Length: 248
Image (cartoon, rainbow, N blue to C red; front, top):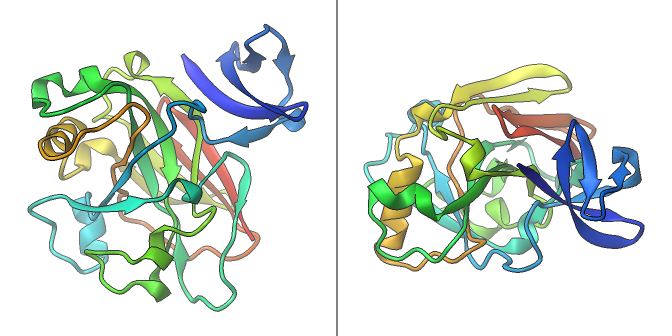
């Protein structure tokens, strides 16, 4: 099932996708032009921790002229970075290069501590799409992105759906694509991750406790391009939908 969080008639509420339409919990169907999309996370539990992978695709590491990492390169993001489907992301006026990053995002479903790889998928509630924008001008070190690169308000659109894990048989075989103003600029597949989803859950839970609602953003393939004000960026992942965002 595909779940969404929306604002309708001034109230934040849960919705699901039913026969190609949005259905509220009371059974009513609503038009997309009558709602505002929120990140598809329940109000409780909210994400306590947002973990994001850097250089988790070898082709992207090569694109940036870095050696592929031998251990996950991870940074932490604040919840204030998240915004919803069809929302705006601000590009600072003084920057020269700001690019999207289409990322499969894992939503943790139950407390995970010292989880073994073979059991990792049992701890996943579902999957969604993140577009984790980066501003290269502010980058101090590709291995440790600073706050202004990855923790800006509205810099991480998320959604539109949270898709139940049971409806994603193999998260490591999903096609990814990004378009800018209708032109395909990025394509890849989650099979090309250096560190796959089961590995990441085993790795993180070996030294920290993952809680329900925590997010893991798993990195992006190569093909990033500069995004200018007015650009419409669509990041899509097979089976999870299309996440629209406009640069302002």
